Length: 239
Image (tube, rainbow, N blue to C red; front, side, top):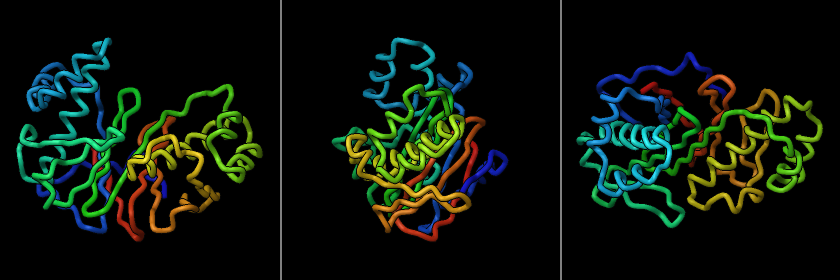
């Protein structure tokens, strides 16, 4: 499944998330100073400390925007103010809602590249999302041989140089989305096999109970969402 740019819609005020839905939010991380100040005020003390560690001002501002907007979005689902949210972290570093909000059964995952972020939200099912801008990689086949299965590598070898770059990032985002959902981490990238068949939705060969949803959030970019279950409805929102 591929979602083009024009299908990203503004969310209504009465936002609801059904159990068979996956919501994905597209977020512009480059925000005016006034908005950044407001978003910074919603962050926890540890998030403020993390923001201060960034050497480049642009990276610091994008971190503040990403975490502040994440808090704002999740707050809308939970009916609480952004600054009231509490996170804890899995061993992989993946943020999850603290036990205070366990009854909501809300799961989320955030990814960003350059000035764009995506936030995936589900109810009572694990979810992961990954976003990459397509860029030239000189040793793309060597990387594919290292991190991809023999079948995936064979597909890569049969492509034109331009198509090879795009398909590499499609494989990468699909695998990374699943690993982020499960909290396993990139170390097991080569153990996850993805089927990319022309005209067919991407599939996880190794995990039958999971779905992959591919997106095109911006020009020259690819993204993927991995989510538990099947027959899910994808809804895309613009923050």
